[in-house]
Length: 405
Ligand SMILES: *Cc1c(COP(=O)(O)O)cnc(C)c1O
Image (tube, rainbow, N blue to C red; front, top):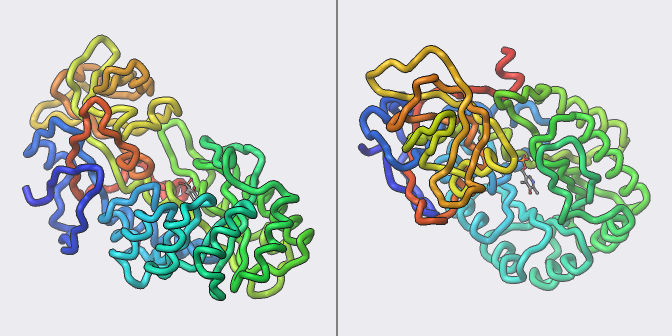
């Protein structure tokens, strides 16, 4: 089937635009292909619509955090939804985005970069914005760009751990005093100066952004320099079966109110770097049951594949059974999964609610996996085969404020 291709670690670029209305459904594909390797299903229409909603709602530039899902079809759908800025963390991400979108604005937002990556980003890919959280990195950026006069320099702030599923301040971010010194040190070399932070991924508390913004305000005042940009990072949450976060509007309201309260000079701009919120609903993974033992299902994908967050983090992705042409039981029962590798850590406890008669050979679609799913796959134990397809299905769980609509 033309919609299918086997995927390896890096997917080839495809330049043709598929006709979305003609895309198959997930069930169509399972019935025809009967895939015995994980099948990654992308929903380009969902990705584009989610991006459009976010870009419209956010009062500033929206930088997509590419690490979350660098699949070219995903990037293309986000572009179609109006995303023009990309938060990249590596030379590979930068060259991928530049290759696909010559006009994109690319921002190098990893606080610790190799010298070569800095040189290539600036010299070859027209990247001008660089984040830093220490004086050493400032020196690297200035040296490797030849003390360019057109740099955007962003000081990443450390935040105390907050109410997010995944803390992202453990290894990056300057403490307040250091951040003050860095802002002063960077100012003379910066065509534009910014502060950035990340409240942690899947942050459930809108107030976390206000607290971070207040900290940014104190640091900017203490530094006594002008900044042009406040970048509130990512962290915007999505729904999972047991988690219904506040709507995006509640987060944006806190951000705007806190931004106004800083009373910064006119012209200071807001940026953000969402990953999960833009792409989670746009992807799912279809796995096959290879053995059932009671309430344990041995499936063909796991924590070393695209289900990493279902392992240690215990995320419960929405699950539904697919058994082409044959009814499944109406009774639902809780199941846990074992992944295909030999490691006993390859377990996903869920529980996932599935038909009580689920059996070997059945397929299961796990949704909300467009973010931090396929991109985390490894080849451990030789389980690196997967198929990717674009489908026309709707999301199973929408972003919080969209489900209310
Ligand atoms: C991972 C990351 C993001 C995206 O985070 P989400 O929680 O997926 O929105 C944004 N910015 C930086 C610097 C990151 O490391």
